[in-house]
Length: 299
Image (cartoon, rainbow, N blue to C red; front, side, top):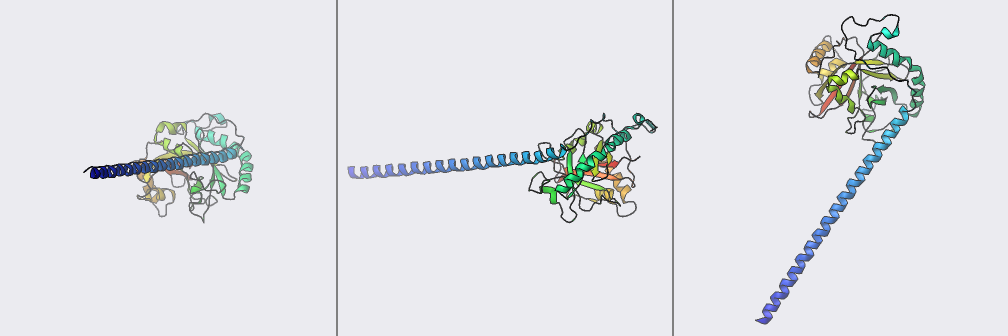
Protein backbone atom coordinates (compact mmCIF):
# COMPACT_ATOMS: atom_id res chain seq x y z
CA UNK A 1 0.00 0.00 0.00
CA UNK A 2 2.81 2.38 0.94
CA UNK A 3 4.66 1.61 -2.29
CA UNK A 4 1.54 2.48 -4.32
CA UNK A 5 1.06 5.75 -2.47
CA UNK A 6 4.71 6.65 -3.05
CA UNK A 7 4.33 5.83 -6.75
CA UNK A 8 1.25 8.08 -6.99
CA UNK A 9 3.11 10.84 -5.20
CA UNK A 10 5.96 10.61 -7.70
CA UNK A 11 3.49 10.73 -10.58
CA UNK A 12 1.77 13.78 -9.08
CA UNK A 13 5.10 15.50 -8.60
CA UNK A 14 6.15 14.75 -12.17
CA UNK A 15 2.80 15.97 -13.50
CA UNK A 16 3.06 19.16 -11.48
CA UNK A 17 6.57 19.78 -12.75
CA UNK A 18 5.43 19.30 -16.35
CA UNK A 19 2.57 21.76 -15.81
CA UNK A 20 4.95 24.28 -14.27
CA UNK A 21 7.38 23.81 -17.14
CA UNK A 22 4.54 24.25 -19.63
CA UNK A 23 3.44 27.51 -17.99
CA UNK A 24 7.01 28.76 -18.02
CA UNK A 25 7.32 27.97 -21.73
CA UNK A 26 4.04 29.81 -22.44
CA UNK A 27 5.20 32.76 -20.36
CA UNK A 28 8.50 32.93 -22.18
CA UNK A 29 6.71 32.60 -25.53
CA UNK A 30 4.27 35.38 -24.62
CA UNK A 31 7.16 37.58 -23.51
CA UNK A 32 9.00 36.91 -26.77
CA UNK A 33 5.90 37.79 -28.81
CA UNK A 34 5.44 41.02 -26.82
CA UNK A 35 9.08 41.96 -27.37
CA UNK A 36 8.76 41.30 -31.11
CA UNK A 37 5.58 43.38 -31.35
CA UNK A 38 7.22 46.16 -29.33
CA UNK A 39 10.32 46.07 -31.52
CA UNK A 40 8.32 46.11 -34.77
CA UNK A 41 6.07 48.93 -33.49
CA UNK A 42 9.12 50.91 -32.41
CA UNK A 43 10.77 50.34 -35.76
CA UNK A 44 7.65 51.50 -37.63
CA UNK A 45 7.37 54.63 -35.47
CA UNK A 46 11.03 55.46 -36.03
CA UNK A 47 10.68 54.76 -39.75
CA UNK A 48 7.58 56.98 -40.00
CA UNK A 49 9.29 59.76 -38.01
CA UNK A 50 12.39 59.52 -40.19
CA UNK A 51 10.35 59.52 -43.39
CA UNK A 52 8.25 62.46 -42.20
CA UNK A 53 11.36 64.42 -41.25
CA UNK A 54 13.10 63.60 -44.52
CA UNK A 55 10.08 64.56 -46.59
CA UNK A 56 9.50 67.80 -44.68
CA UNK A 57 13.17 68.73 -44.91
CA UNK A 58 13.01 68.31 -48.69
CA UNK A 59 9.97 70.57 -49.03
CA UNK A 60 11.36 73.10 -46.53
CA UNK A 61 14.59 73.26 -48.48
CA UNK A 62 12.74 73.82 -51.75
CA UNK A 63 10.46 76.54 -50.37
CA UNK A 64 13.39 78.26 -48.63
CA UNK A 65 14.80 79.14 -52.07
CA UNK A 66 12.11 81.76 -52.52
CA UNK A 67 12.47 85.31 -51.27
CA UNK A 68 8.82 86.39 -51.20
CA UNK A 69 7.58 89.67 -49.81
CA UNK A 70 4.99 89.71 -47.05
CA UNK A 71 1.51 88.95 -48.26
CA UNK A 72 -1.16 91.67 -48.14
CA UNK A 73 -4.08 91.27 -45.79
CA UNK A 74 -6.35 88.54 -47.14
CA UNK A 75 -9.88 89.62 -47.95
CA UNK A 76 -12.47 87.23 -49.31
CA UNK A 77 -13.55 87.68 -52.90
CA UNK A 78 -17.21 87.87 -51.82
CA UNK A 79 -18.50 91.39 -52.37
CA UNK A 80 -21.60 93.30 -53.39
CA UNK A 81 -22.20 93.58 -57.16
CA UNK A 82 -20.46 96.66 -58.51
CA UNK A 83 -18.42 97.22 -55.36
CA UNK A 84 -14.75 98.13 -55.58
CA UNK A 85 -14.52 98.82 -59.30
CA UNK A 86 -10.92 99.18 -60.43
CA UNK A 87 -9.42 102.55 -61.35
CA UNK A 88 -5.87 103.72 -61.93
CA UNK A 89 -4.92 103.30 -58.28
CA UNK A 90 -3.80 99.83 -57.27
CA UNK A 91 -5.12 100.25 -53.72
CA UNK A 92 -8.63 100.77 -55.15
CA UNK A 93 -8.64 97.44 -56.96
CA UNK A 94 -11.17 94.80 -55.88
CA UNK A 95 -9.62 92.32 -53.38
CA UNK A 96 -9.09 89.54 -55.93
CA UNK A 97 -7.41 91.92 -58.40
CA UNK A 98 -5.23 93.36 -55.64
CA UNK A 99 -4.10 89.86 -54.69
CA UNK A 100 -3.37 89.02 -58.32
CA UNK A 101 -1.21 92.12 -58.71
CA UNK A 102 0.75 91.30 -55.56
CA UNK A 103 1.36 87.64 -56.42
CA UNK A 104 2.09 88.05 -60.11
CA UNK A 105 4.21 91.15 -59.53
CA UNK A 106 6.88 88.93 -57.96
CA UNK A 107 6.69 86.22 -60.62
CA UNK A 108 10.02 86.85 -62.35
CA UNK A 109 11.89 86.22 -59.11
CA UNK A 110 10.19 82.83 -58.75
CA UNK A 111 10.63 81.61 -62.33
CA UNK A 112 14.41 81.31 -62.01
CA UNK A 113 13.90 79.22 -58.87
CA UNK A 114 11.40 76.98 -60.65
CA UNK A 115 13.84 76.40 -63.48
CA UNK A 116 16.60 75.37 -61.08
CA UNK A 117 14.20 72.87 -59.49
CA UNK A 118 13.19 71.50 -62.88
CA UNK A 119 16.84 70.83 -63.62
CA UNK A 120 16.81 68.55 -60.56
CA UNK A 121 13.57 66.83 -61.57
CA UNK A 122 12.17 67.29 -65.05
CA UNK A 123 8.70 66.15 -63.93
CA UNK A 124 8.10 69.41 -62.06
CA UNK A 125 5.63 71.66 -63.90
CA UNK A 126 4.72 74.28 -61.30
CA UNK A 127 4.18 75.35 -57.70
CA UNK A 128 0.97 75.37 -55.61
CA UNK A 129 0.50 77.66 -52.62
CA UNK A 130 -2.32 78.83 -50.35
CA UNK A 131 -1.18 81.70 -48.16
CA UNK A 132 -1.50 81.00 -44.43
CA UNK A 133 -1.63 77.20 -44.82
CA UNK A 134 0.83 74.31 -45.10
CA UNK A 135 0.03 74.00 -48.81
CA UNK A 136 3.27 75.26 -50.38
CA UNK A 137 4.62 72.55 -52.67
CA UNK A 138 6.00 71.72 -56.11
CA UNK A 139 3.57 70.12 -58.54
CA UNK A 140 4.58 67.19 -60.73
CA UNK A 141 3.16 65.86 -64.00
CA UNK A 142 3.72 62.45 -65.60
CA UNK A 143 1.20 62.00 -68.47
CA UNK A 144 2.51 58.52 -69.28
CA UNK A 145 2.85 57.27 -65.68
CA UNK A 146 -0.46 57.27 -63.84
CA UNK A 147 -0.34 58.36 -60.18
CA UNK A 148 3.46 58.16 -60.26
CA UNK A 149 3.91 60.72 -57.48
CA UNK A 150 1.13 59.36 -55.30
CA UNK A 151 3.81 57.58 -53.25
CA UNK A 152 7.03 59.29 -54.37
CA UNK A 153 8.75 62.39 -53.09
CA UNK A 154 10.35 65.15 -55.16
CA UNK A 155 13.50 63.07 -55.49
CA UNK A 156 11.41 60.12 -56.74
CA UNK A 157 12.12 58.04 -53.63
CA UNK A 158 9.30 55.94 -52.18
CA UNK A 159 7.19 57.97 -49.77
CA UNK A 160 3.77 57.60 -48.16
CA UNK A 161 3.45 61.40 -48.33
CA UNK A 162 3.91 61.61 -52.07
CA UNK A 163 4.10 64.93 -53.91
CA UNK A 164 1.16 66.95 -55.31
CA UNK A 165 0.65 66.11 -58.96
CA UNK A 166 -1.41 67.23 -61.91
CA UNK A 167 -3.85 64.64 -63.23
CA UNK A 168 -2.51 62.84 -66.29
CA UNK A 169 -5.35 63.97 -68.61
CA UNK A 170 -4.78 67.67 -67.89
CA UNK A 171 -2.99 70.12 -70.17
CA UNK A 172 -1.28 73.16 -68.69
CA UNK A 173 0.08 74.42 -72.02
CA UNK A 174 -2.15 76.12 -74.59
CA UNK A 175 -4.82 75.07 -75.26
CA UNK A 176 -5.15 74.62 -71.50
CA UNK A 177 -7.71 72.30 -69.93
CA UNK A 178 -9.09 72.61 -66.43
CA UNK A 179 -6.41 71.62 -63.94
CA UNK A 180 -6.85 68.93 -61.27
CA UNK A 181 -4.12 68.60 -58.64
CA UNK A 182 -4.17 65.76 -56.09
CA UNK A 183 -2.38 65.49 -52.77
CA UNK A 184 -2.54 63.32 -49.66
CA UNK A 185 -4.53 64.24 -46.54
CA UNK A 186 -1.94 63.53 -43.84
CA UNK A 187 -2.99 63.27 -40.19
CA UNK A 188 -0.17 65.60 -39.13
CA UNK A 189 -1.72 68.40 -41.17
CA UNK A 190 0.80 68.33 -44.00
CA UNK A 191 0.31 67.99 -47.76
CA UNK A 192 -3.34 68.77 -48.71
CA UNK A 193 -4.85 68.21 -45.25
CA UNK A 194 -5.74 71.92 -45.02
CA UNK A 195 -8.37 71.45 -47.75
CA UNK A 196 -10.58 69.79 -45.13
CA UNK A 197 -10.93 73.18 -43.46
CA UNK A 198 -12.81 74.51 -46.46
CA UNK A 199 -15.87 72.74 -45.11
CA UNK A 200 -16.28 75.91 -43.00
CA UNK A 201 -17.12 79.24 -44.61
CA UNK A 202 -15.04 81.15 -42.05
CA UNK A 203 -11.95 79.35 -43.31
CA UNK A 204 -12.78 80.22 -46.90
CA UNK A 205 -13.16 83.87 -45.92
CA UNK A 206 -9.66 83.80 -44.40
CA UNK A 207 -8.10 81.82 -47.29
CA UNK A 208 -9.99 82.76 -50.46
CA UNK A 209 -7.08 82.62 -52.92
CA UNK A 210 -4.93 79.88 -54.43
CA UNK A 211 -1.69 80.46 -56.31
CA UNK A 212 -0.58 78.03 -58.98
CA UNK A 213 2.36 78.97 -61.18
CA UNK A 214 3.60 76.95 -64.12
CA UNK A 215 7.29 77.18 -65.00
CA UNK A 216 6.96 80.52 -66.79
CA UNK A 217 3.45 81.79 -66.09
CA UNK A 218 2.08 83.03 -62.77
CA UNK A 219 -1.46 82.09 -61.83
CA UNK A 220 -3.84 83.57 -59.25
CA UNK A 221 -7.16 81.89 -58.47
CA UNK A 222 -10.14 82.56 -56.22
CA UNK A 223 -11.95 79.73 -54.44
CA UNK A 224 -15.46 79.28 -55.84
CA UNK A 225 -16.77 76.13 -54.18
CA UNK A 226 -15.93 73.18 -51.94
CA UNK A 227 -17.84 69.92 -51.71
CA UNK A 228 -17.31 66.27 -50.84
CA UNK A 229 -18.01 63.16 -52.87
CA UNK A 230 -17.28 59.44 -52.91
CA UNK A 231 -14.61 58.12 -55.25
CA UNK A 232 -16.76 55.01 -55.72
CA UNK A 233 -19.85 57.06 -56.64
CA UNK A 234 -20.96 58.81 -59.81
CA UNK A 235 -17.94 60.75 -61.14
CA UNK A 236 -19.93 62.80 -63.66
CA UNK A 237 -20.48 65.72 -61.27
CA UNK A 238 -16.79 66.66 -61.22
CA UNK A 239 -15.82 65.27 -64.62
CA UNK A 240 -18.51 67.28 -66.40
CA UNK A 241 -17.61 70.37 -64.40
CA UNK A 242 -13.88 70.17 -65.18
CA UNK A 243 -13.89 68.31 -68.49
CA UNK A 244 -17.29 68.72 -70.19
CA UNK A 245 -17.67 66.76 -73.42
CA UNK A 246 -21.07 67.83 -74.72
CA UNK A 247 -23.01 71.07 -74.77
CA UNK A 248 -24.86 71.56 -71.51
CA UNK A 249 -22.66 69.20 -69.47
CA UNK A 250 -20.92 72.01 -67.62
CA UNK A 251 -24.07 73.87 -66.59
CA UNK A 252 -25.79 70.70 -65.40
CA UNK A 253 -22.74 69.76 -63.33
CA UNK A 254 -22.49 73.27 -61.84
CA UNK A 255 -26.13 73.15 -60.74
CA UNK A 256 -25.49 69.80 -59.01
CA UNK A 257 -22.38 71.20 -57.31
CA UNK A 258 -24.37 74.17 -55.95
CA UNK A 259 -26.76 71.70 -54.35
CA UNK A 260 -23.91 69.78 -52.70
CA UNK A 261 -21.46 72.55 -51.78
CA UNK A 262 -20.79 73.32 -48.12
CA UNK A 263 -21.80 77.00 -48.52
CA UNK A 264 -22.39 79.67 -51.14
CA UNK A 265 -19.29 81.78 -51.82
CA UNK A 266 -21.27 84.28 -53.86
CA UNK A 267 -19.25 83.52 -57.00
CA UNK A 268 -20.89 82.13 -60.13
CA UNK A 269 -18.99 79.84 -62.49
CA UNK A 270 -19.10 80.02 -66.28
CA UNK A 271 -17.90 77.47 -68.81
CA UNK A 272 -15.23 79.84 -70.16
CA UNK A 273 -13.60 80.22 -66.73
CA UNK A 274 -10.16 78.67 -66.25
CA UNK A 275 -10.62 76.21 -63.39
CA UNK A 276 -8.17 74.79 -60.86
CA UNK A 277 -9.40 71.95 -58.65
CA UNK A 278 -7.57 70.57 -55.60
CA UNK A 279 -8.41 67.03 -54.47
CA UNK A 280 -7.66 65.08 -51.30
CA UNK A 281 -9.16 62.35 -49.12
CA UNK A 282 -12.16 63.00 -46.88
CA UNK A 283 -12.78 60.65 -43.97
CA UNK A 284 -16.50 61.01 -43.18
CA UNK A 285 -17.49 59.13 -46.34
CA UNK A 286 -16.46 55.72 -47.60
CA UNK A 287 -13.79 56.43 -50.24
CA UNK A 288 -14.49 60.08 -49.51
CA UNK A 289 -12.88 62.97 -51.34
CA UNK A 290 -13.03 66.73 -50.87
CA UNK A 291 -12.78 68.94 -53.92
CA UNK A 292 -11.96 72.65 -53.74
CA UNK A 293 -12.55 74.43 -57.05
CA UNK A 294 -11.09 77.84 -57.88
CA UNK A 295 -11.24 80.02 -60.99
CA UNK A 296 -8.43 82.05 -62.44
CA UNK A 297 -8.50 85.77 -61.64
CA UNK A 298 -8.37 87.70 -64.89
CA UNK A 299 -7.82 91.37 -65.65
